[in-house]
Length: 505
Image (cartoon, rainbow, N blue to C red; front, side, top):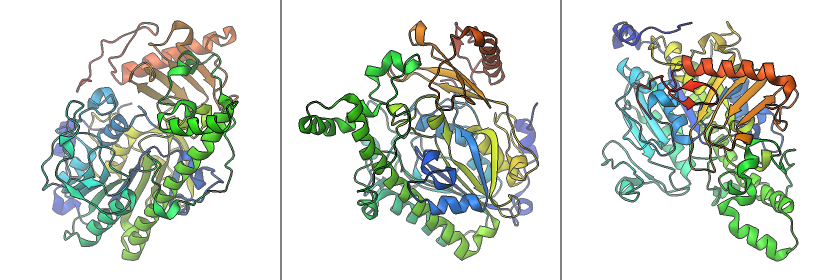
C-alpha cells in the first residue's frame, strides 16, 4: 500500500506561508539518548519516579512498541530526521557523516514557514541544515560545561583522523549539560521574535554515559537503596548468539565494561574469591543507580519544558513528542548497552501529546518505528508527506481512528567490529527471527516466541517442530528486504544484494 504523494507532487502542493502558518500547531520534539522504557514510571518502573514523563503520557498517547530500526546513536538519529532506513539515508554506522543536503522533516517545515531550532546533542558530524537556529554539541558533549556550536561559529566536521580540531571554537556553557541545554532552548522559546509557528528539537545527552559525574542534585539519589535485579542478569547465553562472543563483549556485558575496570579490581581485592556472578551483581547496583540519576535529570528538565508551555499558554496548540534514539539494556542478559535486537534495546519510549486530537491517557500497541516520526509530524500539521519517506504517518493512531500501521518490524544493525556483529531481523507481534551472518554457523539464527518467552532465553531456531514457522519468518524477512530495497547480501537467507540504496552506505 502506497501511503504518500510522490516527492515532486508533494512540493508542488506545498501551501504558501500566508495560507499555511495561521493557527498551525507548534512542535516540541524531545529526543533523549539511550533511554530505556523500563526506567519510566508510565512504562511500569517502580524504583524511581518520573512525574514529567508520566504527566505527558497521562495527557497524551503512550506507545508500547516504538522500535528502532538500527540501535546506534548516529544511524537512529538519521532515521528520525529523514523518515528512511539507514541504507536509504546513507548513515549505517556510528560516527558516520550525514549528508545534510538531503530532505529532512525540519527542512520541509522550514520551507512551509515554520521557525525551526535545534538544541543539544547532534552526533551527525555534518553542519545542521534546515534550522533557523541551532545550539549543538557535535558529538557526545561533556557532562559539565559543554562546548556548543551555533550558526555564527566555524563548523569543522569531526573525523577519526582529526578528532581534536572539530572542537575548536564554539561557546562554552557553564553548568550541568542537560540543565544548561534546556535553559538555552527555553530562552530561545521565550525570546523568539517571530510570530511563525515553531518546531523546536531538544536533544538531551542523558541518560547516555558517562554516568559520573552525576548531576549535583542527584549525587545521593538511591545511595542506600538496593534495586531489584532483572531476572536475566546472570544469563549464560546458552544456545543463543552472544554465547559465541561472550568473552569479547566489553561493549555490552556489565562484567567486562571498561569503565568498571577499577571497580572490578577493588572488588577482587576486597574478596579474592569473588565469582563472576557476584561481580556482575555488585556492578549492577552501581550501574543502575548511576543510570537512574541521569533519568531523573531528563525527567526534571522535561518538566521545565512542559511547565513553560503551560505557563505561556503555548501548550494548547503545541504537539509534544518525547522519544529516544533507541532503548537500552538495564542489566537484562547481563548487558548495559543497546546494540542487539533483544526487546530492551529494540524498544524506545514514544509519548505524544496534542490537545484536541489525542485522547488523554491513550495507549497504543502497534509496532511503530523511528521512520514514522517524520511523516507523522508533517501529516499532523497539514503538509504532504513525500513519497520517498518509508515510514507511516501515525496520525490515524493518534486520533484513535486506527489500531496499527504495520504487522512486522524490520531491523538491520551493521557490524562494528567482531564484538558488535551484523544482525538482520524481523519482529512480529508474537515472534522474532534474527540472522547473524558474521557469526559461526552454529550461532547464526535465533527464533523467539515472544508470547511464551518474553525474556528471549529459549532459541527455537533449530527446533524441528518450528521448521514451518521459521521458514515463514524467513520469507517475511526477505519480503521486507525487498520492500525497503535494502542491498544487504545474505546468502543463508537467499538475498542477492541487488537492491540499490539511494544514498549508499
